[in-house]
Image 1 (cartoon, helix red, strand yellow):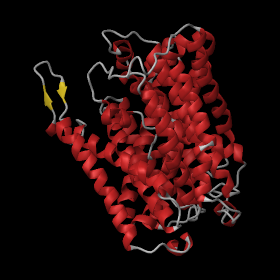
Image 2: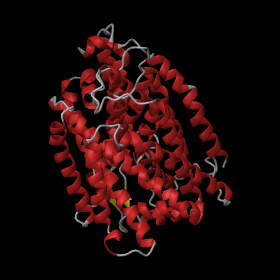
Image 3: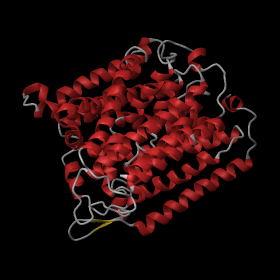
Image 4: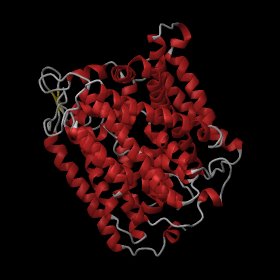
Length: 505
């Protein structure tokens, strides 16, 4: 219990202390923002700060800080440390700079920003990378809530079409198309505040239930070990699994949406850094639920593993039921359903904007928006319906999303480091987490069974995976140090530009 409260206090304190440090290094000023200067009534629309915060929170939240945090809890309360320090020193920094760099470059998508600071080759890589990632996220966040709604109706005794996952998936995809096509203030700007309240109340309800119903949150110092039932290594699997609750490259694709709607640069600390800290708090609560609500057998989280084996919908439903009972479960499930839906729609919207920036297609005309919405949502529909019909494995999509997600975060942090160098600022606040995430991403690529792990890992006689950490660990560290060396060598050979505008031009 003490570990949880200390980590919670550190997260809140981190917003005020380290968040202000990051904000001061960036030095926001009173220049005219893209929302004011361009204001096309579609994607560039001035909105109040409280709406910007709630929209950003819902954009980046999804199922990541909920289900991802519960999966992270399989390793035990050590996950609290990653959520806390990952959020403060990496995730919130990443989100802040991805948003503010976009704001200072006409609200450009993260792929275009990467090209500005890392070169044309990286721009093209990021264009493809971003679109693929966003379509995968949109698909995941359509399939997930469709399953949750189906579970609600099935448990309520309903049968027929309303209890069909395919039925709810199609409805969600239709909503995604409308939200992607219309101007950002028509739907997103109006309904997100209500969903934001549900999300916050849901998290508070789970936390309150843990405390009032006598569940005991284990302490880190008494369980500083790997409690994963399958013996999966903490490094780097936990850092990949708990993405949205600590650091997530997906957030960099979402921050430009709000960068196009800010009235003042000085809103960035609250909107970008603050929303990520809030998400870290949500992830911490769900990780605490995973660690405290389920039985531990022989020092392993077997009870939680059994709950997760029933699927994410059933696992989240079970936590809500245990912590809040019948009274609060409807509100809680509404929050869990709304959370991924409000990330899925903006994922597809971001994919549209990446393509628009890529091919220089003006989005003020509805015909141009339609031209991009149809293929983007069409691919998402094929993947989602394929899963609903049992043709495509949802977990495979999620595994590939997890690695690409953290690799994107790594690239964005390196781009932010170059930005700070060119602006003559302290680039170490982004270069250090960039190096760390480089080690995480490369190590996982060598160990993950969907990546090179299928060739490097071995199996025991009973089918258990033996991870080749003897190769992956040192290679991951060496590559990360190499990336840092390349960065330092590059900035040594270049002269900082007097202003970021010069580089942009």
